[in-house]
Image (cartoon, rainbow, N blue to C red):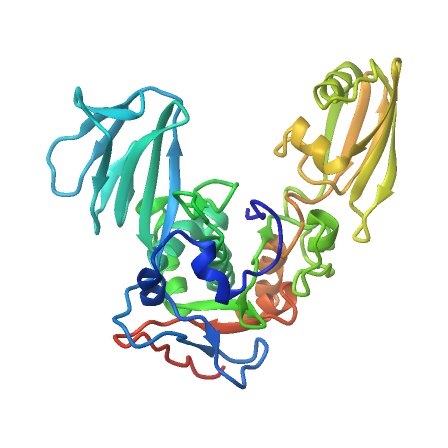
Length: 404
């Protein structure tokens, strides 16, 4: 579920894309055209993104996905059209491929190639990194969206949710692409980025949603937005400012109805006093055995911002986001919680899952079940954003998508 990597400076200025990416000017110009045509309307019609470059042959946009990082061991890789697999392991700054040393391995597109049992379209690059192996998949943008949709929402939620999610996924990936700097990939294939399943995650329904929204992205003032989303808001989304410290006009707090069926609407997590004390010590704030926990401050959406914790050896003022990361984000599902004393320690009672910013996926499902179209869902969770089309052509121009 996406969140900013280096926060949240907001949408990236498209004029700065040459500085923001290590790719060549020609590759960027051929991949995507960025300026909004005049007269665009907010979430009321698909508008065109006009090319800022001299005519050139357009290539489909691609996304570079970090699909695997290992700390050693052997990786099995099967290249498209090759009957046997390779055994690959790290060897210093290079690789051992079936016992032979080489600096890196590149498998060209279109694939599909199989890495660790999973199939991927596009090209695969494998090199040594962090004492292990690093695998990057460069995949066409729309195939990336198709391979990510069912990693983020269930297919059974229906076409409307899939379409809204497809637009958010595409926008987020391209936003990250512009912010990649010198990094060898644009986005991670897990919850640090978006849950990308490769070709094995595709389905007819996923491709139908991709085709129905092909090239559609969300923009604000001619810039791609940070299309954040999360599982369950707990009744109200959080603003970008309260979570990441930077106000973004399209990521304001909005009420959310219909999340009652989410398994994350209500949760409780018991945590012992000794464990809480050890966690605080690891955060550099030792208080001994914890005796009391109080919410010191809440955000405007009701989420816990800071806690005051007292123990046998002192007191600490702790960020709720920091405590959640330390205890585990799967365990402490959000910062929308209260804390109660128990005989054995404390129980955190909360609602929601994730950072709470942007589109609530369970909220989107509820809107779809009430008959809302995907455009209305996007308008609800990204107020004021514009829906635009980024379709490339032989001349590098972008065709208008028409009206809704």
